[in-house]
Structures are given as structure tokens and as C-alpha cells.
Image (cartoon, rainbow, N blue to C red; front, side, top):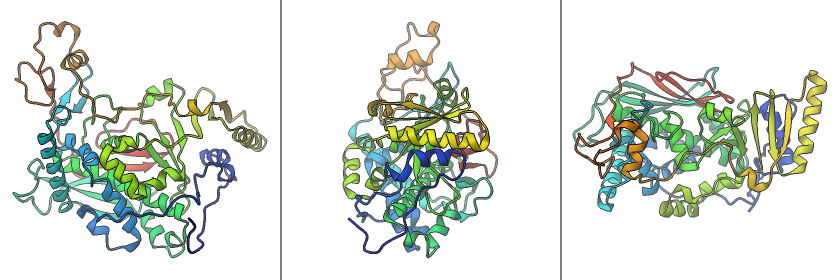
Length: 454
């Protein structure tokens, strides 16, 4: 279906050096439809906007993005992500001292699960009364958004969520680069359908990413987060939500251009593990995959079967930074990509007098869909008590211990293999940030955690 009025479409450019030039060369003439796809259908979301986002709903241009953000908080199969954040006990792996949340839904009856989901919905309604969302200048670090913990005002009422603490409340600061594109008469309004979808998708997912951190502030009074699950690579609940929802972390490219340029994705993995397996892999994300999230048919599937029912984007090419080679390694089945990579590499060598900057690897279509690192699980797994004991107890401590029936139930204190971990409160106004960076593998402190994007 074509638009009623012609709109400006983005075109790729390979004139500069860097990661964007490599991506653009791989997608020469938009061969993989990462920017424009005239076959995608228009949006048909008609759902109401969640009360969390009422303070932004006055801007007509934001309506579609807010409807998408609301869908992430609308269905039982998406709301269930928040149950461990609010009702999961914080546990500690005895061997590694790694703190993580148990999932009360693992062994819950249908009635108990329904009770938890209803309580989450009430908590989100309560959060809507205590969170402040604003747009701020991103500064030189190009932060997309950040969440802060501040002194609470107004105070919680007795009818609000009982598990929320009553000292601190969250503020969410969104980059005003989002708003500038929405407000610019030559920006969002004149952009193509696909360009609008990309901007709305990034804004909506960034907003809900920060809502996840805001829930943590209300529950814990700080931004010191344990691992969402024991196998997760880092203590970042926003990333945990993206992994739950999309099976990967999505990153925009070419941040110096108006709006939202094409998206790439990566498996959420420990930096050291990724380095040992050749480096973090970034894969292309087609417009058809992004556009489906603006259709009620997609959300009907999610509501019934959960987000894992939506297939991951088909990978046409992937790239990684190989520190041993000192070069980008680009993989694809398409020989045209190889030709364009060789041309770009030759052009850079002539102009910079350097060694090979780009290496090519041919991979079959099936091989491209497989990551070089294991992806964190997205589904709930009911581990047997014996398996849990094996994972958290020293070998000499396992024999003769009566196994509890539920790790997230309330077994007698003398029989439980895990112990609660109590974390010290953070200082005032600590932040969780969503920051634009390229392949940043550095460790961040728990007091000022930055969210990286490719």
C-alpha cells in the first residue's frame, strides 16, 4: 500500500569512515530493506494509552508511539515480566555471590498467577501517579534516556501498591532529540511511513525500558538492581526486558541524522564471553520486522502466545569487531555484499594507507541465524530442586539435604538452599542511563550505570 501523499525517504551514504559506512555498504541501495519497504502495511493500533503516558499524550504526533508503548504493558503475556521485579525474592548464588530475582510464576497456580498479574497492573497504575517524564537535552554523551531516584512527592496512599517503598520516586528524562523530530514540520510529518515507524518504535521501546527501571525505584528505593535471572550477563533490568520482548538488544545507527536511522541488533551477552567467541555480533533489522509491531494482528498473537511467538528478524548480514585482526568482520551469503565490502576496503586503504580494515566471511542463510554466543532464555523454566541445589551449593554441602518444593515459595528456612541478599541503599539521584556508544565493553559502577547502544 502506498501513502496518499509522497513523503521524504532516507537514503544511505558511504562517504564517511566508520561503522555506519560499513553497514551502509552492506545495505547498498537498501538491498535488504532496512530503510524503506513499500510493502509494509500502515499502522492499525487503536488501543487506549496507558495512564503512565498520559503526561505525554497531549502531543498528537506521539500518539502512535504511546499506543505501541502501552501495548507492552497491556497483555498478561507481557505484564508477566514485571512479576519478579515486584514479588520475586532477591536470592544469592553461594558460589559466585551473584544476586538475582526468583520468579514467583514458576510454580504458581493459575489463581495465584492471576493474582500476581492483577497486582502488577495496580502497581503500574500507582507508578503513573508518582513518575515524572520529561524531555531534556542529551548533552555530549548522546544519552537517549535516563531514570533517576529522587525524594518522593506526593506520598503513597494506603490504596497504592503495598510493595512499593515510600521514600523515593523515579523521574524519566527522554532526549529532546526525539521530540525535536516530532515537532519539526519537515521531520516526522514529512517522513516516510517506514521512517515514522522506526522513530516511533525506538521512542516506545526506550520509554518502556525506562519504565522498567522506574518500577525498580518504586520497589527498592534505589537503582541498584540484582540480575533479573541468574543466567543474565549483567544487572540491567531494561536490557532484561528487551531480551524478554525481542530476544535481542536493538540499537539505532547514524545518531547525527534527524529522526531514527536504521536499526541493528545484538544478542545480550557478557562482554568477555563475546570477546572469547570472536566479538559482539551485530545483525541487520528489516523494516518488515519493525512494522509488524504496529499491527493488531501481531499483538493478538503476543496476547495469546507471548512475545516468543514473534520470530526474530531474519539476518541478511552481520558484523563484529575482531580486536585480534584490528578490523570489522562482515558475514553474509550475498556475494554482492562481498563486492561492496571489498570496494569499501580498497577505498579506505588508498585514502588512509592502512592495512585491511574489513574482512569478509561467507555464511549460509542458516548459519547467519545462529549467534556466536548463547542467548539468554526468554521463557520461564521450572528447574527441579535438585538442579537448583547443584547450581548454588558447594559439592560437599549437597548430600543429605531435604529439597524444598519451590524456590520461590516459602520453604522452611533450614531447608532452603538459597539465602536472601540485602543490598545497601544507593545515594540520592543515582541514575540508570541509556547512552549512545559503539561496542562499549567497559564495566560501569552500580551508582551510575550507562545503557549502551551501537
